[in-house]
Length: 276
Image (tube, rainbow, N blue to C red; front, side, top):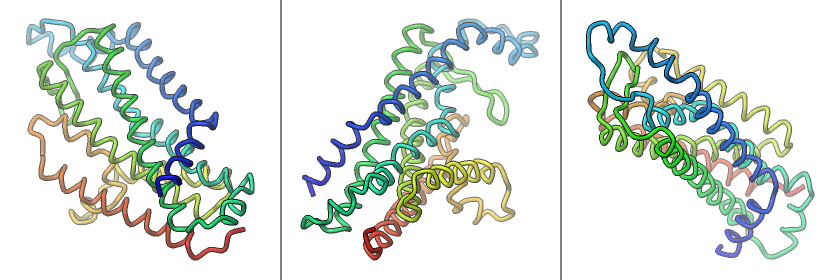
């Protein structure tokens, strides 16, 4: 198993699209920071215009914490889409290059081989989110400094600099779990479809549907709580004034259940399918 994991990790970081993905995320992050540098103050002034007429607001609200919160908003679409493209490509590229048949000419168990891909997919996802956190933390705080965080989420909320920093760290952790869900889902879609283009289209469609259904009230608390597409906003709960920890822990457990179930389905399908 160690050899399989090493081989999958080597292949992942040898392919050029992995580095294109990392570069894309850094470019998106850079665009957010540049936009904030030139337009951020105007946006803050518009947002707080009415409050300034009533309260005296002291300090720089356009700071590193606010910029990190804006970077977190890439968790809605940009980040999961890029992760899904790279992760699904770990398998579809093998089918495209006809290397799957060659691999199984050797004494390799199918379930171990595909399991190693799921494990590396999880590790790669954690690496990408961690990289996004580290770069955003460093760049945002160096160029914009620290300060209190203002968030508009069911009304305006203000958090002290230290409190905001802690909330952002936990939000990135929650975001990692959500991104792992999409990564595992994309790999299972690749197992089913095999084809590169079809897999990417279905992955994008899956992500779009999840984001659309996230905003829809399903009518019952049970469906709203346990539907997989209702879990991608768990990181936002850390920016409520009173953090609903019980809801967050439940969401994480439900997400873990979906991750294990979806991965298991992919492994079973791959195990039973003829290689070809």
